[in-house]
Structure formats: C-alpha cells, structure tokens
Length: 618
Image 1 (tube, rainbow, N blue to C red):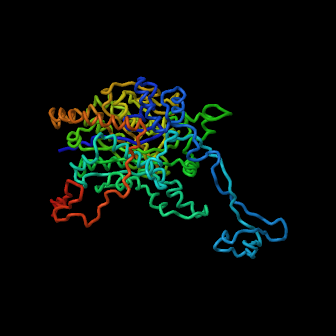
Image 2: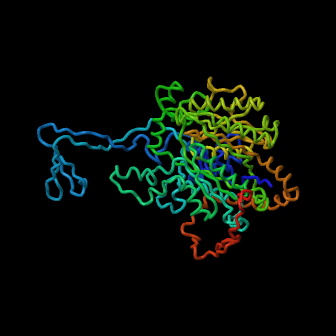
Image 3: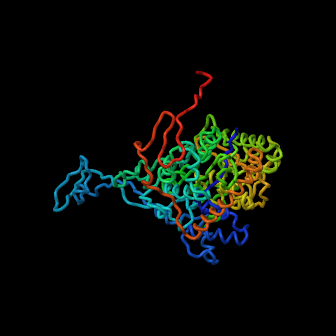
C-alpha cells in the first residue's frame, strides 16, 4: 500500500523571521494581512528581535527596516572595515642592514638565514641583510553591501550553551527546535509508536561552517598567529547540521544523512526523506538545512566569481551616480539585475507517513508528491546552467498531472522559482518554465521568486520557498516579486505569468506548487508539493471518512498546543531544545537477541529480522 509523506510540522528562521505558525511568510505579505494578523506578526518579530515594543509606529518601522534584504549591519562584521594583511617588502635606505628590536618569544621558530639576532636586555635586536618581507595590518571595504541578514537583535548563541559553536549550528539548534515544537505533540509520543530505527534525519549545509568557530578558524589560525581549536575541524563539517539534531535535540538512532547539492541541498535531503517514508523504512523524518555564509571571505569569493550584486552595479541599473544603492531591492529576479544577494537561515520540516499523521492527530500542511534530481551532463563551466533542470521541472509537472489531472496542473498550480537575480538565471530558468508550460498546455503559469525578499540562503533556499508556499495555503496570498518593477526583455514569458504584486487566492485555488532549485555544478532539483485540501481528500479516499473524523477530534488539542507554543514564543519564552549529555546510553545497557535489540526508554524493539532483498535470486 502506498505511503504519503505528509508535512506535519515546520520551523526555522530566515531574514523574514521565525517560520513556525507562518510568521516569516506573513512578514513578506504583511501589508495584505488583517490588522489582527499584522499585530501578531509584529509581536512575533519583536520577541525574536529582543524588542519590548511591537505596537508603536516607530517600533514597527524599525522591525520592517531591520528584516528582509537590507544593508549589511555591523553585528556580524563591519563591511566598511574588514581586516586583512597587506603584503610588503622593506628595503634598506642605506648600506646598513635593516634593524629592529623584538621580544624573544615573538621570534619565529625558524630564524631566516639572513637574520642576525643579538641579545638586548629583555629582548633581542634583529639585523636583516637584504630585503624584509612583511604583512601589514590593513582594512578594506566590501563592494557588496546588501545581504539577507537575520532580523536584527536575534541572538541564537544566547538561547542555549552554544560553547563557541559556529553560527550555522546555532541556527540549526533554533530551527530544528522550532520545527519540533510546532508539532503540537511531544516527540515522546512519536517514540512510543515508532521504533527508533524508523525515524530519519536528513540535514546539512552546502558549504559547511565557514566562520572563525568552524572551518574558517581552522584555515586562518596559522596565518593569524593563532592556534587551531579542537572544535574547528569537526564543527566545520557540512554534516554537523544533522549530527547536532541527532546528538543534542532528538537523540535519534535511526537513519541519518547529510546530502549536499549546492543551492539544491534542502531538496536533496527532502528526496531522501520522502523515499524513506514511501518505502516504509521510516515513518517519521526530520528534514532540514542551515547556512551561515555572511562572512567577508565568502562574500568576496562569490563577488569575484561575478555572482553577487555589487553596489556600483545596482546604482548603474537605477541611474544613480551618488549616494547609496537601493539595498532593499538588491535582489530583482527576472528583471534588469546584476547578481544575487547572499543570505543566512535555517529551516526544518517534519514528515510523517499518512497513517501516523492520522493516528497522532497532527496538523496536515500538505504533502510532498515527489522530488526529482538531474545533473546537467557535460558542461562548459561548473557554475553555468545546463539541461538537467528541464528534466526535473518536467517530471514534477508530470507527477502532478498523474496525481491530480490535466485541469489541476494547468489551472491550479504555481511555481516558486529559484530566481537568483542574475542575468543568466533570468534567461535560462524562464526558458525552462516557458517551454515546459507550453508542452503541458499551461497558458499562463504563475511564477514568483521569494529571494526578492530574503536573498539566497544557499542550502536553505528551497526550504525558504517551501515555507512561503505553505503560507499561501494558510493566508491566501502568493508573495509577488515586488523588488522587480518590470520583467527584463530577454526573459521568456509567452506561457508564464510573473507575479510582480501579491496575488490573492482562495485556499483551494492552488492544488500544487513546484519548488525549483538550481545549484552550482549542475545540481538541479524540483519538488512537487500538494496542498492540504488535496491531501485531506487523498487520505479520505484511502482511510475512509471515519478515520478523518477521528483525526479531526484528535487534532483539536494539537491545535491548542501549537497555539500555546506560538504564544509562549511571542511572550519571550526560550523553547530551544539542547540536550547535551542527556540520555546517553551505553552498549552494556542494551538487551540483545538474534531477533531484536531493546533500548532503555524506547517502547518499540529494534527488529533484526531483515527480509531477504534478493529473494528471487537466492
């Protein structure tokens, strides 16, 4: 019997705010919301940003100004004073040697051959015959000043004993906690019903942890005259996103993995999760991604590739010769643009199989019909786009047609574009959408791109798109590409409807959404996600009306607990989950037989009776 991967919880944080209860989505469409929903959105933002006032006009303006894409703020680093070393060679101005005094313990361990070292009191005098190579302390200003920074005042490192964790892992702890708390049931309820080996976690970053507490510190320490920390190397790994969830949040003993597919990383992890559920290997899966790339080196690396929107280029597009660029509108998908805008964030979703979702009475936010991944084949360059995305989008449309029919695909679907805001992306991605819309008989496929609000969070990008799509089924507004005033002339659009304004829809107008992602190296992925009303009908057909009635009854207290969690977060309660050294089980505590392994605290035994997967061959 088929098993449907149902989305039953979600959470995290990005430049729009906290994801659970749709707060991040609502920040994007806040002008369209009722006053009561606006009030709650501002209250959620105020709590996240450590502000006490969420009602005054001044406070609300400050919250709007210090969320979404904006000018880089100084809490991460000063973009106008980035430290660096300037290489120089000193030459003597006379026939004498270059001479200087220095403390003995400041001397290099390996004295150069052309140095003469003489004792001088509590130090030494060094004479150099010939030239002297030096590194002078210096600073530079970043040519990229726009970024999708998390809401100002949000301090994830203070929510738990972060112990100098890299920022990406701090965001992981917050994001995974938010998703689990959004379930409306305690995770112990899942453990009581699901064996430990039938719970999976798939999460990662695309680039690893690159700040000074991670790989950045590992690689910089020697050149900065510092020592490598014992944490730099292990905590810098991209897989730590999943490892932290397993070890400190869930205590997971089931399947785990950290898939990396550049900007498509979240969808790579999502594919693993839904395959586990569809195959019956797992009944509950946590899928996520975290990325914290807002460091001077990463920004400069992308800039030198020609990938980022530099201030001078933005001003040139807008015809501005003086003053600052329009940082709020730095990311302009499918318009006249000049590069993408880097951002940070962490997003997680919880998937149950359909039977478990009904049994536990959890909310049903939608379901993942499938995720398709294809490479580009031979390429002219690693970052350049190729043909793989035609296949992933086409397959996603094909599966929706198979599940819901031609009419639904053609009239009740829309696409969340990768929409990076580069001149190359606007042409190539629009051609993919346009050609496939024409092939499937779609006259005008609605297209939006939420990077226009929050920038490009790399591994989290498709998760950000998914969170915004879930919000559409909750509040009825597809976020428009409001940073783009007009569509560029070279964009293909004969069968596309680019939404430059928010579009209001009823909660049943949209049956499915396509989440598209294109990554460096030819990592293409597209997910087909089904709306909650569609999923409910599918469950009714499979399980019957009585099962849905029972689920509705079980769901009432779940909804109350979700609301209670949201209110507690708005009130400033810290609900971050971090179980360091808690519940550790040693091998001697297990009860082992040839049939199974019993684990203390787990109601379900781990079965060792594994079916022969090659029964027809042995």
